Image 1 (cartoon, rainbow, N blue to C red):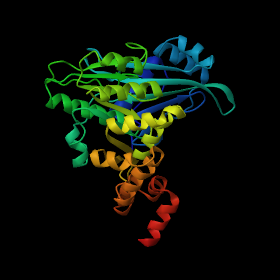
Image 2 (spheres, rainbow, N blue to C red):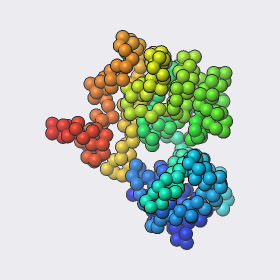
Image 3 (cartoon, one colour):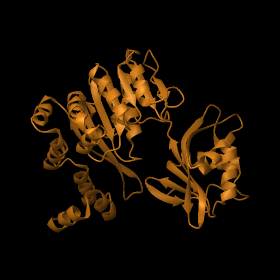
Image 4 (cartoon, one colour):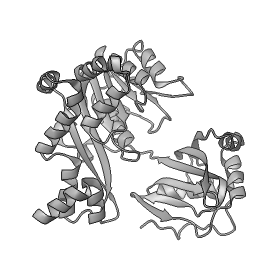
Length: 385
């Protein structure tokens, strides 16, 4: 359990006290911090919600803190119904400001929104995602051997999928860092919203170039079109959200660049379905076959809370080769998602299959297992056990 008693909120929450608390959360492996009008501060620690203050945060005080820690324009944006996203960076000094040493910095991405919370119709809710500074070493992440060897093909497209907070960005950052350590003559460019992990591969002769949407380029699609003239070996996409980005990503992949990105999808088959459904009806078949031609892998990852208070990464994935392309190409593209998922089911290589194994080993509890597997299949497995 997170050591909450070590942070002292006595005397009220000032702007500097809040900044110190953010650093405290970073030190204790918190992933997200939630502040909202009229409620105590709550944090996410290894996938579990933990109350981090013993008193509610008054609305007026929260507005004041936002003005002082961020910028005064956020209040008008939120109250105008637009919401806002802002980065936050805290840096230390010789005096240990905010609990950080000189040269040490912590980065966050923050979302602000207006909402009804309890009896308050115009409450403000803000969510901070802590951006870790240390990139995990790919070899130490427990990646399946065949997937590990397939992350860096010469060209084509790879998708890392999963829900929010499933470690998609972390996994991709580890892949990028591994590339930099093993390909000193390579060139890596990314487009992110916002820039998360700061890539630094000392062996790369050209340091990675990370562009932020809205600051450096207007959109993912615009950045991807520019990438074709920048002679990169790898192009990274923070998230494929729309058809324009998808088409630009496929074009990069088909032009001989390895193009890697994230997508919100719950299975490899669903990833294909989501991409195809971004297109209008009359162009879906073309998009589907372009994807099939370009795709090298689709991996879906979840982080499951374990009984020891930590989290375990589980993955299901498909490595697309000529055999896959031939089999799918013989069928109508609308059948591809089910064919892909059926193969995973037959091989018992779904996330659900791994969750069951973790449950049997006692590493996840029945609530987590049932949520991942589905109550009907989970019940059937228990009865056959």
